[in-house]
Image (cartoon, rainbow, N blue to C red; front, side, top):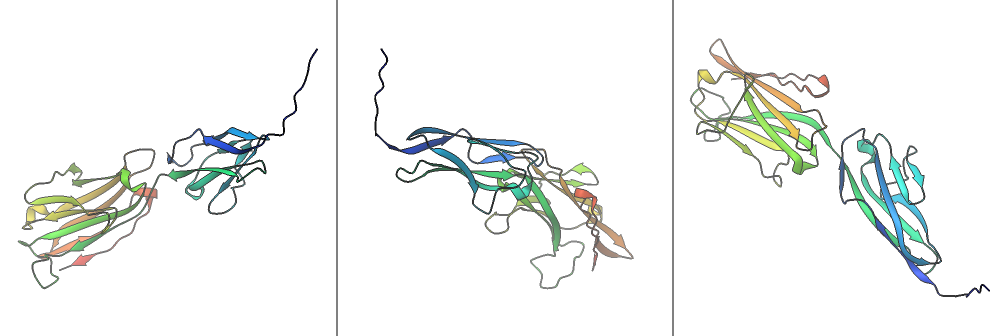
Length: 233
């Protein structure tokens, strides 16, 4: 004989996410978020939402599983799984998706800060600064080259990275006591430690022309675009 016992017990929902927080991915990768119920009576229903608008049309939903194929920077942000069974408050768990990116490389020249004029002259200090926008910023690394050869920080060529609270994503090359032997092409290369993203390279050419110094041109090789500018003193 089989007997059944009816119960009118109810319980509010509880859930957990089977993913890291945050999730850092490269553009083009597929990502899957998994949400499972850990409690609730009656059995809760699961849904997904994001904090900055509706889910993308390419998003694939299957129960508590959300898949984003070929992710882009536009898909980055906070995603939340919500469980509801009309008992108590809905349960909610969230995770943040970060899509790696490097963009908007630029440079600028600062003449000797110890002199009032803006001239760049032999025997004085010159600072070359290089800045990029990086996501995530903590993965950003810089390298400096002169005529294709790696530069190391020294007494006369000082390489520093600016405090991110002051000027995020910025590195500086200070050339102390500028000499004619310093003429050449200086390259700042920005990379992300996680890889999977094309580096951004910015070239600054220091050359002599009729006894003058010319700072020119900037070339951003990421995405094969070129921007040129010149300074003369």
